[in-house]
Length: 394
Ligand SMILES: C[S@@+](CC[C@H](N)C(=O)[O-])C[C@H]1O[C@@H](n2cnc3c(N)ncnc32)[C@H](O)[C@@H]1O
Image 1 (cartoon, rainbow, N blue to C red):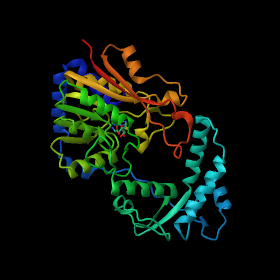
Image 2: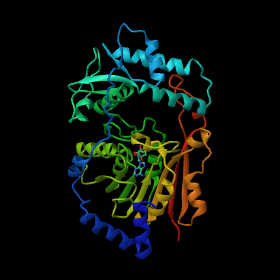
Image 3: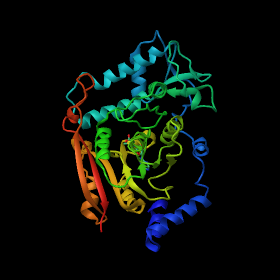
Image 4: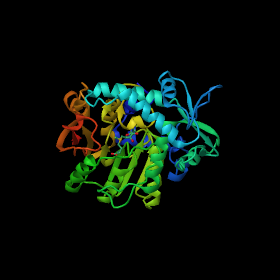
């Protein structure tokens, strides 16, 4: 049992829920977990792509070099340093993609995932040079993250795909995203999860609009860029406490909260599930990762893949943070099943194996098919998102 679970287990055994939460509040005070939001955000160290130390005699590839030798080296796990201009790196990556994927569009989900893993692995050996916190390649995009995320280093090398990731993240951050369920734009920080499809947001909004029970306070576990927390506030919830395990998500949602002047109504903390929460709420909301992890999870992967035990830990604690007439709301999807992965449905499993919660409502919504242009696999065809409204038993 990890530290948090052990902690929770001990207190539930020895005192009532109310005492447990108030003890936690006192403890948070003692350990200094209670700080102002900006104080806390300033202390957070965001995840960023790690600079790579160049080998002594790197292989260079420039405007005049043929791409094949560079592709061979990448496949061999050897570093290739891009020279001259940005498009050199782009050309090598597209040659590598062509080499691995060919023109075959009939791969199974598993075969496709294998090729994608190989591409991910090899492409990260392609390096881009950075000088004075700017890409040292002609015709490169301006990427503000190279300054913002690297105050401690000016000249370094990053894997080319990471640079591409930083570039698109900078576009989202500077231009913002307009969600159909929100009035204001959201400006996601680098490495924070933000939804690019809206099905679960519509589903949640539909449920929230109809919900007539108490909704003064809410806890949003795994807030990402904060979109569900903002929905809660828009629909009349007075105060939201949000957590995320990823520091970049906490920075992201905190920056937007400040920009919108909502600091009094939305508090965001870096925390594993409920670790730092010391209050109960009318609504406890969790839009968890939807796929079981196959490998170790780092950074943004924790938005997509869940570790074994995540849901057990969540359900072990959730009841302690739910007010008497409160509701637990979980957003999920059948993506794992559609992808051919044999796993238990975590909510169904909890309802079947324990008698802590009972189902009040279940609603689902078919996922809008991606357009032909963006369609990659057929595995999305039958996909739907679902919302589970649960209450405590007894
Ligand atoms: C699918 S995303 C949902 C983000 C956002 N709530 C939304 O609906 O767009 C899942 C989020 O849960 C966070 N997360 C994963 N494991 C967590 C944990 N143990 N404690 C807190 N947050 C976690 C991830 O970092 C990610 O931001």
